[in-house]
Image (tube, rainbow, N blue to C red; front, side, top):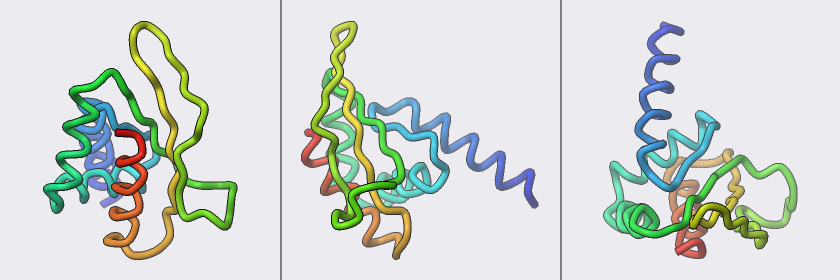
Length: 109
């Protein structure tokens, strides 16, 4: 059973790196996959970022407790690409967390 879960996480991680919206956290990868699978708006946001020079790294939110999620305002540019960091909560219903992530991706767009 554990092997199957690890294989699923690895496959999701491989798919995630085809996109400009990325994470190394299995919970975040699951939210990205859910958003891509369930929401046309989410797919549009990711496609817009994929077609741009922006890469977005999403991580679990560890600070700024008053905020549910945030786009860090420091942008790194290197090699013709811009790199952004988004932090989101990882506790709560999947539906709410995907919507929260989509909201933050809208800021990145």
